[in-house]
View 1 (tube, rainbow, N blue to C red):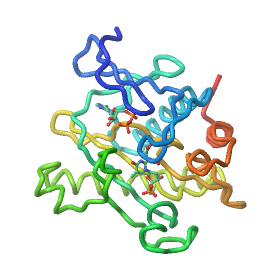
View 2 (cartoon, rainbow, N blue to C red):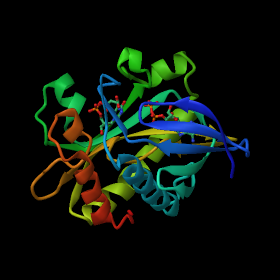
View 3 (cartoon, protein in one colour):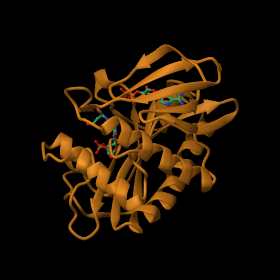
Amino acid sequence: MKKKDVLCTGKAKSVYYTDDDKKLILHFRNDTSAFDGEKIEKLARKGEVNNKFNAFIMQKLEEAGIPTHFEELISDEESLVKKLDMFPIECVVRNIAAGSLCKRLGVEEGIEVSPPIFEFFLKDDALHDPMINEYHIQSFGWAKPEDVVAMQELTFKVNTVLKKLFADCGLLLVDYKLEFGRFGDQIVLGDEFTPDGCRLWDAETRKKLDKDRFRQGLGGVVEAYEEVASRLGVKLS
Ligand code: ADP
Ligand code: TMP
Ligand code: ASP
């Protein structure tokens, strides 16, 4: 597979065309960003850890019947994926209150949310990813009603699979963000599932093992990601 011109350079990944017009290469860089690009740092090894972490999770999701864009790992920091027509939407599920939910509603961090809460956000850094609902999505044509249903169903299916996968390693899946796209007539999970886009706590101590370590300046960011990877059995070099 030949790597061609860059399609886009995001905050943490660069995306390249390939000689197959249906496939892209995702390059997971060491860049780490929070607060919609306000805080940026390079963290050694993060690109490799996230690339391999993402590959592991995407394969587990595929095995569980969830269509994903993941094709194969092609280097330490790069993966081959299907080229999706991405929806400008972020799908979030919360099992435990944290982050913007606590700020917005004044609820205490750490309380279990039952049933889990689903939220849509518009993918727009300049607007700080505002929360939106099905009406905004339909009225502004960001996705069709049947796509909204499919994204919600797939996001909850991911919750069932990953809550158990993490629980079996002594981890709580607090919340996570997914991005979907269209591949032909199929709705497919794109982007990434890594500790950059979810919250994971140690089940016993509730130690934060995700990007909140970076957001909150707690240190040991990549070490925490590596601990999660090691508990899952993700092979790193
Ligand atoms: P951000 O957009 O938040 O800065 P990244 O640095 O992760 O994020 O950039 C990756 C970009 O690639 C995002 O815009 C994402 O929506 C897009 N993307 C991810 N997977 C695919 C895919 N399979 N096909 C097309 N675009 C994708
Ligand atoms: P939040 O508490 O900031 O709304 O985020 C909820 C979860 O979704 C958290 O795990 C971080 C993730 N997320 C992103 O990774 N990127 C985003 O742009 C948003 C809105 C959430
Ligand atoms: N995902 C967003 C960013 O990287 C928001 C955040 O993580 O704070 O900027």
